[in-house]
Image (cartoon, rainbow, N blue to C red; front, side):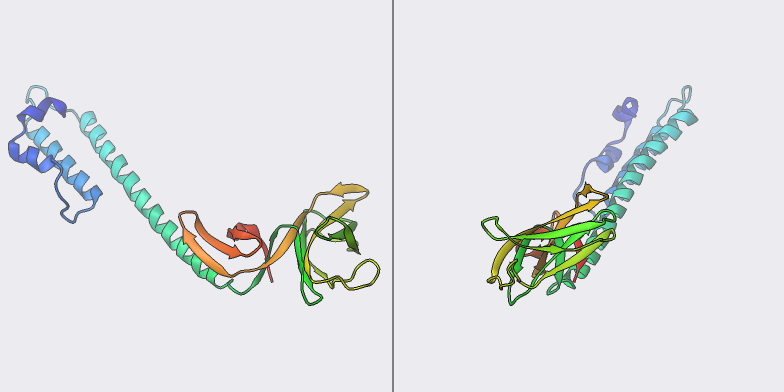
Amino acid sequence: MASISNQLPQSVIDAMSPKTSTGKSDVDDIQDRFMTLLITQMQNQDPLNPMDNSQMTSQLAQLSTVTGIDKVNSTLQSLIGTYQSGQSMQAANLIGHGVLASGNQLGLADKQALAGVEFPQDVDQAQMVIKDKSGNVVHTIDLGAQSAGTVPLLWDGKLADGSQAPDGNYTFEVNASLNGNKVDVDELQFGMVTTVTTGPEGVRINVPGLGALDFSDIRQIL
């Protein structure tokens, strides 16, 4: 195309030059300029050395590639917008609900503390070990054999000596094994969903004590 640029009429050069917005999309604008240039090139080509089919096919293929990519990007942006909108509506329904996500904090209030654990496989022994803020073990709960999956855990605040623990913040860990071999588990902390935000990182579910979570961070809704 460069070989004929000096032969183009001024009206054609003006038509291919960038202009202010006319209401057309970028794809339409690219197509218009390309077709104007291609037609002018064909009209002004050397009759003794005309453009062959392969050249024309190559140029049309380039146009198809550029416009195709632009349309794919537009479609993806539309799908992302729709997906995020749907996620926002789903997340909004979680406000006021309790959730379990990775964490080992345990809050005791009114003789109740809720937590959870995720077992990656079946285990034949499991224990929940509860500690105070100084790291001292205050109670151990035998969970017995458990199947793979997420299991909610409830502590009534009873200490090892049978007395009642004061309300406050504790930590916990779950020790599990199968046939005497240790099995790594994921302790789950309980929290209440308070707000939902949407930003560049997507939809975030805000849970005091757990922070801003993705949908994938939530292991169970209670």
